[in-house]
Image (cartoon, rainbow, N blue to C red):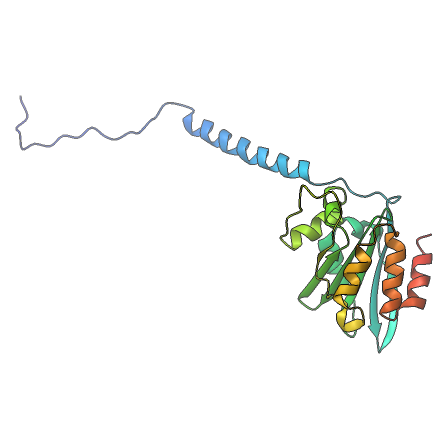
Length: 205
């Protein structure tokens, strides 16, 4: 019996039902994601060791009095962890974290409630040390690949209200002939934490 011209007959659209294609697509997607993750891991520097880390110190004022608190060395490899720790400190106006690594680079982090400021003495250190890498990422900044000389990056006015103007902090950060620990000691003195800071530094010796 022949079908009339008015009769409609459609083959079901089964798509491409060859076995394994969906699984193959999933595997390709997974490979792409893994490749991206591997590339990101390759760009991230290895953690600084205890021998590399000079100090991690929190500065704050309690009832108007300066306090310097030594923190765990592990925080020198973890900006998020350092921010969390500083947020827990009940300072009158938040807390400031000082980190020095290998006497080459220093990082300053200031936390006041939800407001976070960061400063790194040398952006090029992002290729070598995790804390500098984290600061550059936090700032959503790009390191100048063709730069032969280091340069500071971040909130240079981070301690302006404490007595250290932005231009002065930048000038100190650019003094790459000076050890980063010595520069942080000078910064602590400028903002009125000299005595307590010296005692805190002694705990790392």
